[in-house]
Length: 180
Image (cartoon, rainbow, N blue to C red):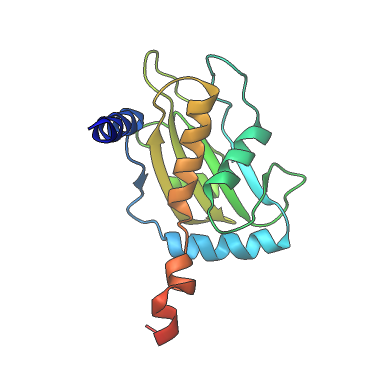
């Protein structure tokens, strides 16, 4: 009986930790994004651009921390995200915090990211956009559950993880043995 009570409590705690889903943009191609990211990561750090650092209730955040969290979101691939001049390739991850509702990801790839539109009382939103030069590849959108540094960290790695999903099943799964 105690075992079932513990399991029930664990499931309730897990449900309480759930956050809003991450939405992949309609024109996104996460498979191509993953392949391009793998190529870019082999050449060195991948360029990271941030439109503004989100305000947090506890610990100040930095572009370096956001880059670490973005890398954490990419499963099965060793990648570093850094700002120029450390990263110079054409592939780039653009983190747009509190994007305007009419933001077009393709426009962000060919121009600079817009300034954040902070709305009082609204949770921090993030639109993560992956570009190769001026070419749009993929984007995802998510909202933070709160305003702490941990909430922002979680927001970044969840959004980035959706852009670059783990390709383990396709690369090494049972289907690879049969050429399917």
